[in-house]
Image 1: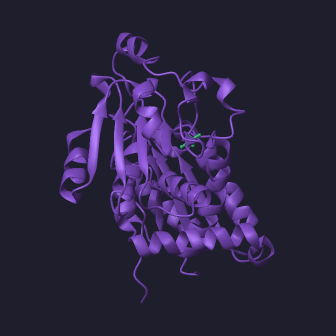
Image 2: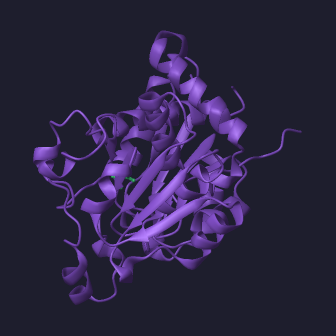
Image 3: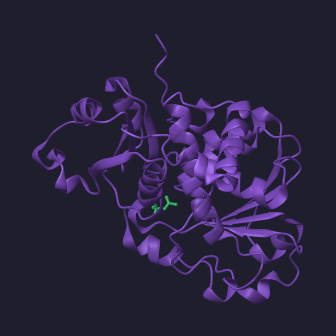
Length: 306
Ligand code: CP
């Protein structure tokens, strides 16, 4: 019997498997007609206990473009969670109705708990301030499309590095590529968690922390901006004090490399001024589009079809 696989953390995938997914996604981009019926009669359940625009809609679009069907809910309140059903029971039920499940939850570890109960593949679509592996696959496809490589890149990560699950997963993935360096740009209170710093040290990669975005920009190949996430704060005063710590404006890109790219998992609030959108280095809307293609590749892979 084939082993049941889940994607909870990006480290569940080897570098070779990530390259395979990027290859599939790039083939889908070039030859979409070859994939239109690939998932005919298959069903994806999108179980979103926390709000989403890109992740849920791109998973939905991905399954539709593969010729499959989608069911699910977009808030806990419209599921039996509101009546007290456990995550495990919800996943057992969804496993009865779907071939694969994409699940987002505000509690760290909830998809791991779900995976223990599942009889179909579970994909973590974001768990609290923990991990967001499919965003990382999106980011990797974006970087590969823009640079044609993953190695020898200096990546600046700016904003909420403490609760930023997209940042945590991206670091866990990128530290496996040769010659990658990180520049962490955050207020002290939103520094990276210790366990992520330990992962970088164990991997022996070069990284540093700085407090000035302007000073960091000239050396970067990728500037990865993130939102200070109101929903992760216990105290609104702290959020208000920290929310506008870093705002990227177009004039700040003057000393940047010509081929640097500005990424953001989105949604943005204030941290990238809209006047950056027209700069050729702005890659965040392209990045959101890549999310659909890599999720198409991932669905095929998790279903054992590629
Ligand atoms: N990047 C991302 O996870 O966006 P959503 O919260 O809109 O899904």
